[in-house]
Amino acid sequence: AILLASVVAWRITRPISKVVVASRELAGGKLPPPLAEDGPRELIALARGFNHMASALDNAQKVIDDWIETAKLMNRPLPVPKGRLMFA
Image (tube, rainbow, N blue to C red):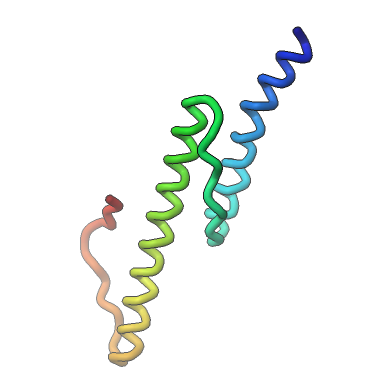
């Protein structure tokens, strides 16, 4: 029983630890590799949500970088957008 409980606990905590590591990488400005979407239903949902969020942030950063490059080429300051960024 103790062995079975240890295996079950490991199967749950290991993927959560990977999400923690990946979120620290993302917070540090590095895009982590996509998380594996396997295991119990809740962990699959967590991994999918994290992967979607990381991808959306990466895409938004690319758009911002493109705007900055365009502004540099035009030799003009970048206008400050009004409102909020919305991720689809």
